[in-house]
Image 1 (tube, one colour):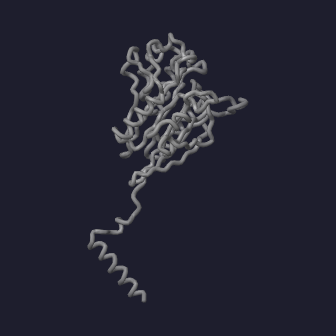
Image 2: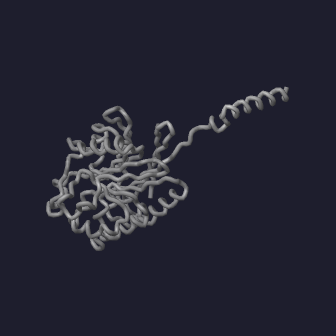
Image 3: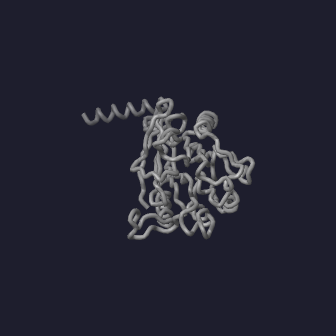
Length: 301
């Protein structure tokens, strides 16, 4: 009996090989993983909070964040590190170093891309421009028109990054200057409607550039009671965006919000609180069929 089973199996295997169908032809296609780490509204918090702090005891700190990032990169092949704005303003480090320290530390942590928050204009366009050479990462902003300012040509509407054959398009959106930024600080920069800009950017990145994943770095805010443009509205009113990483409202989410876009497809919306006490992580899994899945967690720093 055993001999007959052996012969049957051997004959079947030989037949497959003869047809050019080895065992490897039936293996599961490889799944590629992309990990997106993100922060927002760090506001110049360089050191950890004190152990007796009422809200964030012994939490945060750049050194700890850098260690966590290093540990994740050591075990995960494809990592993007992004920030959704308001890097500046909040501690004496900004008052003294004017943003230089923040950019130097983010460069050492090897951030890939950031967008601008309203507080990143607190020293004016001149102040931001002066520190920009220290940022060894890119800034993206699609709905701030800097053409008539000294930032013209230095801030891109979007960037495309490839990781292990995964093509990722990332664009930025900023909040309306009105009531938040002194006119003397943004000068001739022009705020454009973020919904209309997002539609154009997402279509370009998904359909023209053929990106596998489209990410919006948003400093619009998570959601509002009043009728204001927010990340939640952005997700619902657009298509072709896969992930919205938010800022501005200092929203602490236990897990990302998954919403439906105009076409009924899923959009992941996440925000990691403020002051660097949390770091968001969203993992995307790409199958050869083009399907994507995602998982996420919040990392306490």
